[in-house]
Length: 254
Length: 326
Image (cartoon, rainbow over all chains, first blue to last red; front, side, top):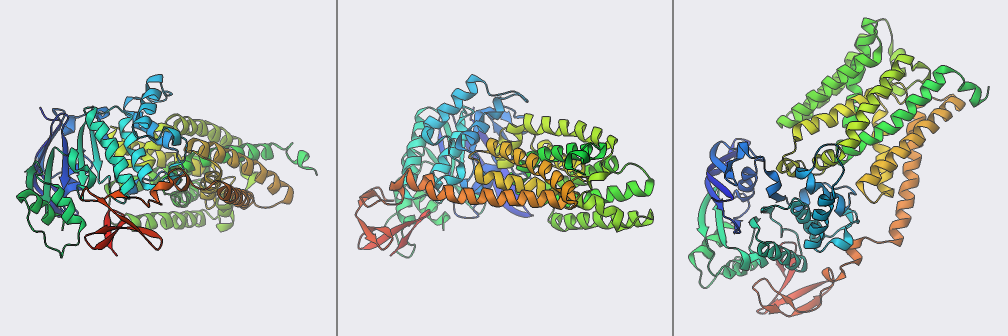
């Protein structure tokens, strides 16, 4: 039984069809990348799977439970795009502590278990020393890591990331890659929306490439290095040779 | 007559109690409103409550309970409109807000009371706080504070990131409705002291001042409530001593404290620059070989204020999530 099973997803936003029959699955301990260009529907797929956008058709189940009946939200850690989060002057610790809410009861203080989980999550992303800094003072990479720590505080089995590399410099991208590799080693399933594979490429087990709301490839990304390499170049220098998957992925990101 | 003599009168004691409670309550609720970037919501709700005051004048009942009910209904309607995501929500809000003022003035006029009587509710009037008002103010203030402080982890999560809160299984719609309901109650309870047109300032300005001084969300709420109590109490004393309208006196006091806080913050910033500039300087000043996007090492070249990486005869400069050619 997969952790995420979605079939025949159809989603329209403001009357425009965005997903037209998308299938997606994520197995235990599997790292799946959702790839595609702007408007391909990759972020919408992720949001539909989490129940953040309504679907017109299709079945979604999480951990074997239909989405509409799913209550075990503590098993999922969602990491939105870091630009979208309004943090004001909340500290990293406060943000990460809010990740414990699926485990907390109303009107009760944090338990020792909560505090341990928060400390562990901070250590996992190497932000222990900055825990009491306001989020507003952080760099993009630090903010992204803080959002990952918030998702980890619930001790999830699946972590879902929306374009975690966007807007980060190469050093921050590499730091983030280290963090995700540790999560993969720890046995988490990972579903990640990416505009380009970048430094994540070696850890991706399977790529699902979308174009105009349709899956055009679902499988391993052979010689995916080609994809990243070509994408980073400007598109007027034509590639010498491509595998089929790399070619599709490159085309989809245009 | 000295200030002490003045406060031997029951109505002045009631005014002071009401102002202190408003000072405590407004920033506590305002912190969530500001975090959600809904600073003008309090203002709009004040407008809606005016209709309630007008209705009370026409029917000859106590203004505060009627205004609370009308304001609550308006607030919940606004929030439901927003949650439906109607494209016309913006226009809907404007109609509701200005409709509130107009209906209030209209009903007050029909009741034979002019804008003059209404203005004591718009800008605050110390002598008007009744014993019944005080009971209502204390009772509802306790409810709002218990919810606002007790559920602060949940409310915080919703204000920071609604989508994320939804993936935590939180009842996001209900929590959002609670936030606007708390705002509606707070606005209306403050109509005697700060006034319905100025109450939004007491929700926003102490929070803005506290944000300059506090290093966390929790400290922001604490400091904002302290500032609220100081300007509520202090403003009432000044208002009584100088015979000035209470609402404007309290709000101007809050703005003076905000200016002080902003000044202190500016001085602190000069002494302690941001973490991201200090803790990980390598992020901004890499002048070594770096692994490039194809996986091999590329020689780095300083180019004016940034670093380029040599690639088969041309230079790449990292720029956000892509590379620029230089």
